[in-house]
Image 1 (tube, each protein chain N blue to C red):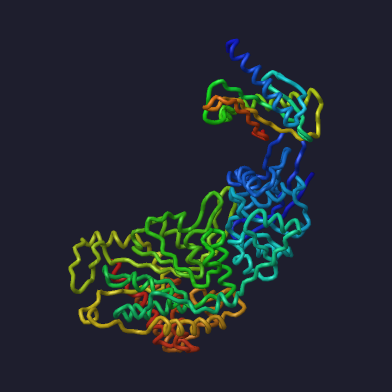
Image 2: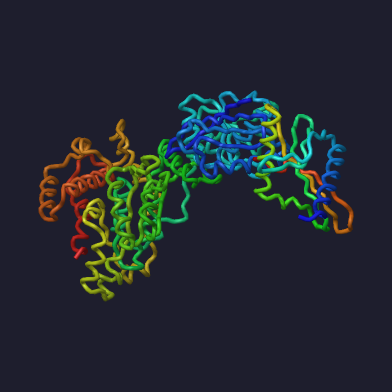
Length: 121
Length: 510
């Protein structure tokens, strides 16, 4: 992974963060890591503790890149989420996994899409 | 939060109560189903999710533990979709559980939120009635079948939304009713009739006797002589089923999934005609969780085996036990189940591979060895259990050119019904339903012979070298012939007719 894509990722996360705040999310944590996984954003949306994965693509695309969420990726997010709950001693809270996708449409316009409850364990 | 919803499971022909317990915890979302679910139960998770979302509900957050109690029996089939979905709606407080007490819920969900029919509704409702449960929520498709059981309220639903509305108490649904006697009163209509068959008076008479007493029968004749034609017309002269018999047969068809919305109650005696490539398991029943086979699906009706010697030998030999006992017990690692199998065996075959053996006109081209080999497929013990051995000869030229003659099915049916009525009265209070199933004790009581008949029978035993079983069976057939004659005592002509139905195969057998 070169510097270029790293920067692209950072930029995407910034965009996503702004978008989520607009949607009423309160951001709690960024880039949380566990030994076997990582989560881009952790936020609170009403009664839900939301773990957000940001998918950012530079190329133009016909549709959203949600298909890029492989099982291994989901498992790594799940693992990190469990670690987070344990470390912060959070119990009795509804959790949710959301995915934000950022990509360019064929006409060049930026598209941001939020998939609530995108997957479960 | 925890909720319990009543549901049911099928084992063999009986149902038992299953409690669907649903617990939700506030943590990472997910779902697990415990209580030995099979693949189709586990897959309910995806159907439930889609059905909830497409019915305008929210798929509830949290981690769901779904337990199907009792936890030590295997659960199969999609009938838990509806109780699981309703339970999820209740625990997530999208629906209140006003009407959940004393309510049994079964149903499969389709992805659009519709509720589809499931198998085994009749046994489920019968077991609910036994346990004193009052109400059952069923798919609309199964409503008629469920309503056959009197004394419980059947709530039919088309979709998840309607079911939720009912449980909520916001949209009451009127219990579904069917008129059981109306289902029965209709005179059965058949497209076939005995009057279609030309000639073969001898065979027609034998079929009438077989129908009247529930006797087993084998038709032997050259190709084209009308064996299959005769056998196919047998259902048209069988006596009608009583309500209890009809429920018993319907139960079997319900658990096998052979009922459809056009026919919710089997009102005519079943006629099963499996192809000769059918396996022994297919005939007798079996599988990991044993299912009824053809012998059970022909319960209280006819099992017709065309091209009898073409069946595998194992297939024919497995018939021996149910022919004698009227039931089959199938043991597998999972469970041991007993299914009823009181069927009438009707077999048809050619006298030799080319079909012309003993034919007065056409020449048989089979070697004696081939004929013998053909017959050797049928074991002695099996033939011994067949009461009526009928030769169906090729039609003569005059017969072929003449118009069909003989009585219509309706006329024969009324004679058969009269004979059955005598039998039902005779066996009142016992489990026996027809002469063919008479117990030894009953034979002693009911098969009284005139003196001349007794002498005749003794002679027949010596002459035909009959086994003990054959002796009993001749007596039973004679009893039926006497019943058709409305005679209290068995006369020698009854014995004579019964005995001659046994004689044929001993010359054909080579």
